[in-house]
Image (cartoon, rainbow, N blue to C red; front, side):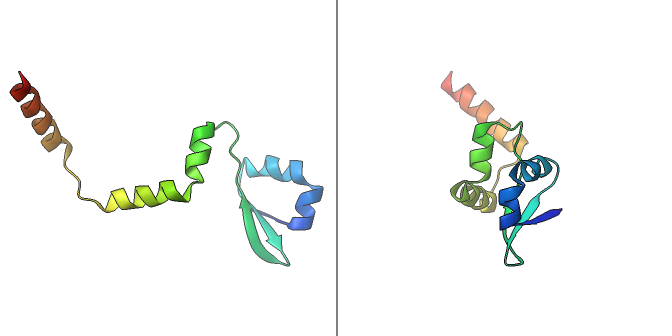
Length: 86
């Protein structure tokens, strides 16, 4: 993992963006971590936006805590509904 100061980032932005495509780049301010540069080249815009969205990840965490239904049980329920609709 590469580390660069905020001042160094200003001077080496292209190099840091290129490096971020391979590995994360930690940006420091006064010797302390301040941000992380992550390459997203080749990803869809929607994936990038959702991946960086705190609201999206809160929703995912919330849904993961909910009770789930096994796939075979869900298939049986759907088949029964289709049969009842006929």
